[in-house]
Image (cartoon, rainbow, N blue to C red):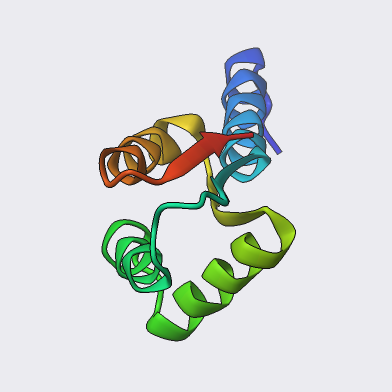
Length: 94
């Protein structure tokens, strides 16, 4: 337990960073253009999913319209989102 105001500020900032890391989701949305194979390859390459995980996410996107494919801070997820967009996929950060 910190005994100074500065120590309390550091602890609070660390807690806020932890909450921020877990509060954002990279969401992949369904489209009528990309093949299952391309979506799976993209999730493996960009999000470092296993093939099985990428297959499951692609099926969820297909049947439900969207799927959360990664969690983290906006700073962590933003380059992943841009990489998916560059591959012609539709992704957002929620």
